[in-house]
Image: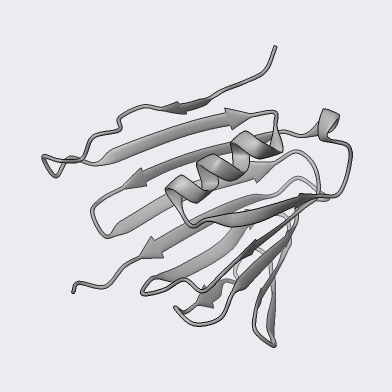
Length: 141
């Protein structure tokens, strides 16, 4: 049985927080859900798609999104420019490699990566159990 993307609340027209709970066993669904919560991206998996697993819990509070992300197989995520947004990512446990342009940060508990709105970004890891906290902020216009 295949897990499906689930949006717990999907209408923030009244300013209410939007909550997401996603569990997926397909890279396509995981990429679509991650793009919806954070940024459109490319998801490359390091093993067979048959072993793929992803979990994401997030909440959007207007211009701020906070989420927890886990993959059950090694992956690499790449995005285009973040436009006007900023992203802060750090592993709560495990290790990840963050990149933006020529800058590389080896993330571990206590070491975060901050990505600005220019240049594409990359996140690589999950070859060991890892949970990443991601914070997306869009400045007031």
